[in-house]
Image 1 (cartoon, rainbow, N blue to C red):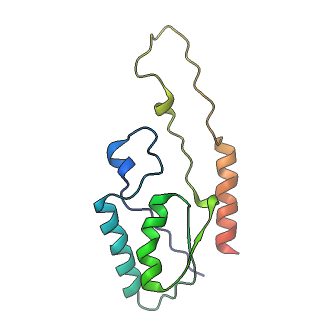
Image 2 (image 1 turned 60 degrees about the vertical axis):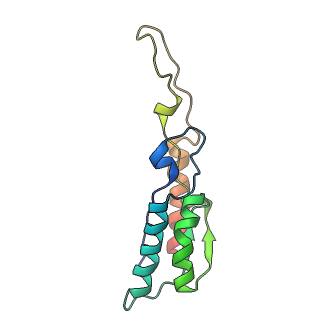
Image 3 (image 1 turned 90 degrees about the horizontal axis):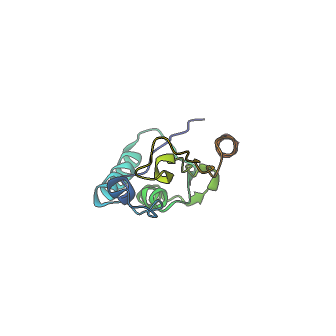
Length: 127
């Protein structure tokens, strides 16, 4: 069994870092990157792709679309493949008095929950 992992193309959030835009679509460059992924898969000699599993995030679905089209394969959405939002710096105030205490908000999911999520996603891939 071979498993190929691909990261999503460039997203609008990666470029702008606009708060609240975490599940953003691909940029024009990201769309081109997704097309290149599909072209690569179509020309991959001797490789039979049997499944396309992606995170339900918009950028992952958009990256998989050209791949699914050229391979004539359905896309399976797997929430366990969704990345975690561990951007602690986004939750901190832009400026604080270094002597005043600041409570960092609890991350959701926690790191341990994220590890369990990834393990479940990986188990589904290799099953």
